[in-house]
Length: 41
Image (tube, rainbow, N blue to C red; front, side, top):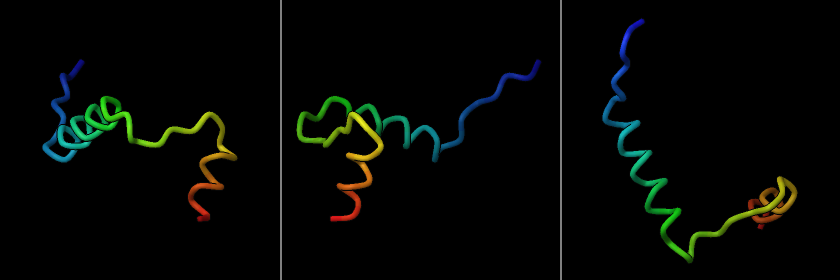
């Protein structure tokens, strides 16, 4: 089995996701419908 190392883009995306999780101002949605409504605004 081959060990896959993430590329720089993936590493940056993971870091951005971690920052978003730690930021209380980042919006979150409980349902897909809530997300779609927010995107339509």
